[in-house]
Length: 289
Image (cartoon, rainbow, N blue to C red; front, side, top):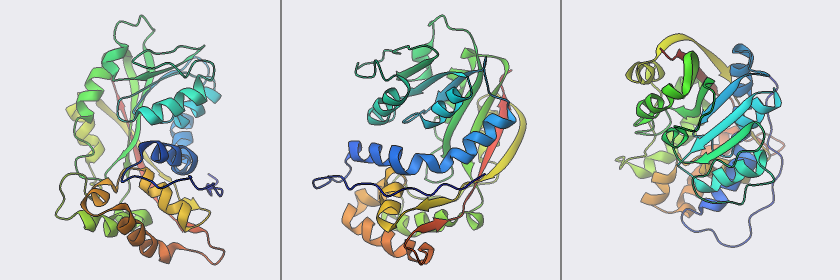
């Protein structure tokens, strides 16, 4: 896979609040989300996603993974209740003629649907069963990030066909993820963790979640996803947009977190000013019963 280097982005005008959700969502969509494109493509290639495939994306965010699946001919549905700002961006990408409406409506357009809500809001929609369910938000970066995921998968499973693939994603071993060291160092600002502090990925994180959700295991893989940025400012904005450092911001303030991030990123800055951090992510393929 060809690594992705983020292009230069314009600064957002005006002072940011402690957590400006609109700015964070835009930074996620413009800078950070594309870092996992090699992972999305590897999963879709392995599972032969294409025309006729029905994909349900849990925690779809601003919709890039769904857009990639749709470009392969798949019919896609995204659901997310964590960030309305990201969902709005997903609607702009996938539903350009009807993204302005609010509420829990699915806003169908062709073979794409974006829902602000949970899988339960899809029940009774009269749609054919899904062939693939994805949860591309990586587990293993923040304390409590896997809590509730098994329950979400249990809710989504009845919407999928029997034997449908369910894909979970996690950070790779810390020693193979340069970004883990950065997050760990800055995350110390929130110690002792008050919920949301950094934690290392565990070997069986994904298997434990799948088993709690009543899914069968059917293989796994690893994909290199280097994080590349045009400059340190873009790297800071991208990493803040993940939400993995929100606890540090809450414990101190964004100015302090920015300072710590700049220092932590220094070893990863190259002569031309770009920032480069090699990472490995792991995916698990489970199956509905």
